[in-house]
Length: 206
Picture 1 (cartoon, rainbow, N blue to C red):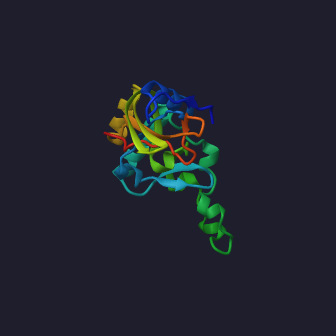
Picture 2 (picture 1 turned 90 degrees about the vertical axis):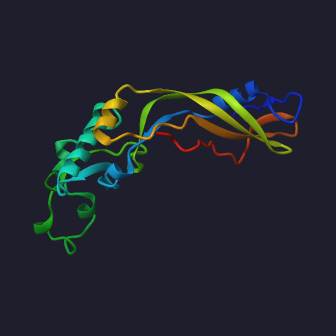
Picture 3 (picture 1 turned 90 degrees about the horizontal axis):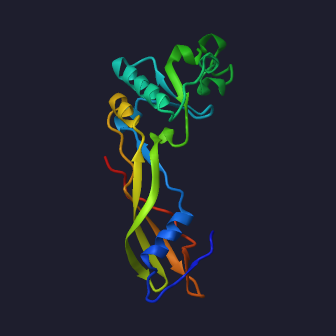
């Protein structure tokens, strides 16, 4: 936690002061989210941290694999190699021979069309899709005698490769244009991030 900033006159911090604290305390990210209809077609391999597409299911699964390929091409993930596909899937690897016999065990390559690395957020359909930074404070609202809610706008630059992801996956939900953070005033009249505050953003927008 960084040092607090001295409070000015009045019950609320200035917008400049609030923006400085936001920039010090929050690591901004530009995260997009895949359509729920696409996410439901993916098979998660939690132990080995991969996201896969099954061979069964027809054309919708071909579309799901095309989506994963587009994410990999944009650098949001990467395809799992041949060695990974030659191994048993997670649920079989963890099962004893008394549960799944050797004769019934099939490699991932025979079960899945393809798999990609489960990068951070991808199990929920989220992926990094650009750059973001706190840009300006929209408003500051008094919560109580010592706390204030800061609402700020985010400047977002989307990756130009997002268009190819949209084409393959369906329109991804864009990053939230605003965020918020609660500040509190200490006994020595300095504003700091509230001890129980969690950086919050409103729902992302299409």
